[in-house]
Length: 246
Image 1 (cartoon, helix red, strand yellow):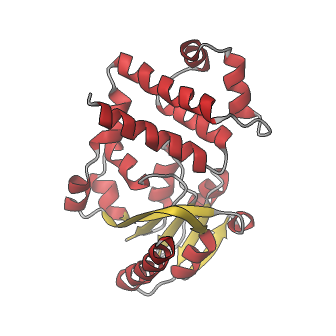
Image 2: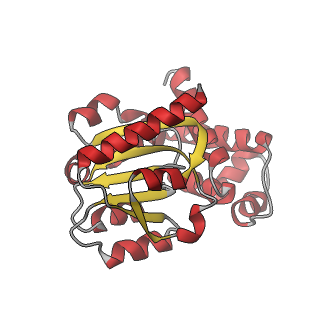
Image 3: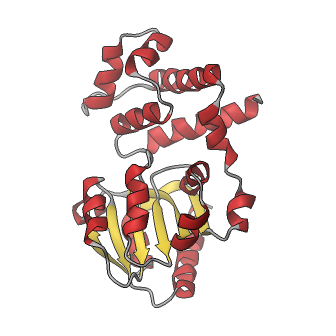
């Protein structure tokens, strides 16, 4: 596998861990994504498995950049030794495939974080659960997804693509009936967004709210009158944030 692609994957993982609201949870999540046990990873890194356990579970312990680099390098090296299956999955979902299927309606990443409150305001949102986390929640991007299209066409490999450069983002689902399907998909997927927005479901499913609460996701109902108005409002937000970045 070409070195630039390996470097791209490493940067994505490293960056996602750094901007995560909980580095401890991010470390555990990525280790599980690669299917590597604490013992195997510790052996590869040349440290005791208790060290990894402490970093994954003790919120008052924060690893330094040297540990994080070794952590990411080791996950990638182990996967390469196994044949590079996870790395291939992370690289396989092309923009062309998803755009062609009309699943991702809009996607934007930012180098500087912005308050989740701004996005909730932009979608005329009503918070269904997670209100206590909104004030301190920051995002690095958002993705607008056609819910029906995603269910019908997105494979597990392609689902990685909707998270862009960071999981610290909002996933905004249109064409929603009750909100259950998006939340069930997110529940079983190893990556979790910071915010999930459902646009004008007929009736918000109670299970979807419970799942969002369990996953500590800020769950929002968008009351925008139609999809076009929603996209236009998000486009304005995007332009405002990009102009701020200069």
